[in-house]
Image (cartoon, rainbow over all chains, first blue to last red; front, side, top):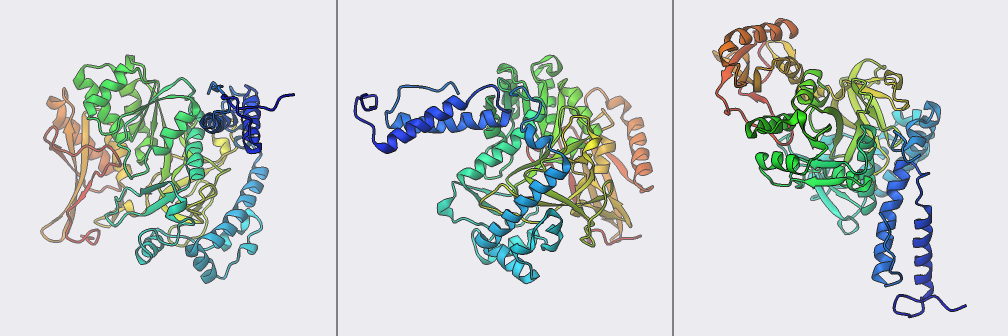
Length: 65
Length: 449
């Protein structure tokens, strides 16, 4: 299995891999089963975390929040 | 779940016993943190001989000393510019704000952290969501975005909810009305006074608000948001429902909001605040249904751990069952009913500006008004309500003025109150907190003639 890389093909550091996992985990949490406050606050967190993964060019994803 | 009528269903419908346990838990943490991080609180608690470990349940709150604005101000002056109330240094904060400065003294200066701003916005969400505002709403703010904290948190809260925010900054009133109209705003946030002002301007511009897009108004900053006559006037003028909210710079956000059921009062956000009601003279707690001064303890703000802060706001707390919305949060019946220091003593009679407003707003013929006090013959207090007459009512004014004078006197302990006509456009208009009392007496409140 190949090592995960950023969008330029550079292997992720351990910290970058953790950050990307946190982003993906948060994204997976965002469902309609959540209370309004929880949904909105996770959306905010996801937007902030996306800024970090985007700055580091870890993903081309763009969350729908 | 996302379609819940409650912003935070877990706590908003929590049984009272659990809610009190949660308050007790958060109180313990707040007191411990205040003692550890705020030199102001450490000195205050030490002076009162109380230690954080003494606070075990919510009932122990009465062991803690009150915090007053005067003490905070004095401390700020002594340890300028921020004083020792702040539990963070300017390096740890991301924003500076002040009180509105209506008392005429140097305003209180506050700092907030990044986390604080998330919390501040979230408190506003309780109110907006509770009154039916939803993602997709277009929310207009009649707010100038300065150092006064005002609607800043509401702006962030509605962004967080997924609303389209329409900021109006330093726009003129006609431009604001045009923006509301052009962008088809569905929610307008303003002080009650300014909501009326916007309504008057819409009339001038030939914009028919009741047939327009605005369905909800969120009012804040003045007691008028809960005065039935003022609220009815706003609702009729806009053809929309109006909800009252109330907050203060000292906590950075709102601590109460009116829900869609409109029970004639505002729910206290009791998972984030403890609101006590005391007799302002003795400091002793008063019962449900009795008017007193609200005292706030706030759990959410890192930079300002506020404990038992005497607000000077007059309120009447009633049980949550007053409202049928299902929230277990208690209600302030009639919202904020005035200020402890608002009371005017006129010839030995206590006069509250809110009581005058409640009567004046029953009269559609009155466009704007001012309460003027002066000293006659160097000794006798006189009071007049000066009114600008709404166009179309000029011919009937003399009869209306007579009825208004009689209504005022009848409702305010028989006190003789003059009713005077003011020239159209001569009285001041307000965007923020209205100041309708002009007290020109030589000695304020001393005359008993």
